[in-house]
Image 1 (tube, one colour):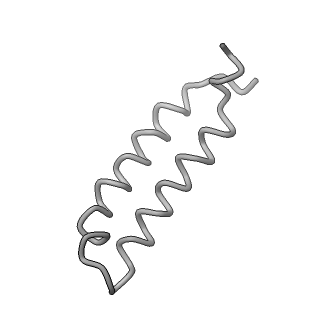
Image 2 (cartoon, rainbow, N blue to C red):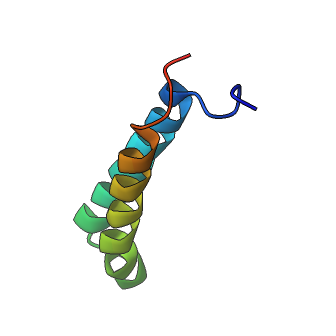
Length: 57
């Protein structure tokens, strides 16, 4: 089970979610993406905070 809860892959996923939220915020074409951008970034930050408690190995 510890194989699933390693820090590096989950930190990368959380960072990608935060990056997707930033891109959604900065794009000028779709209002729906802009509307959901804050929640996407918030989800990424919460993910990153939780994942930072996972073991390295």
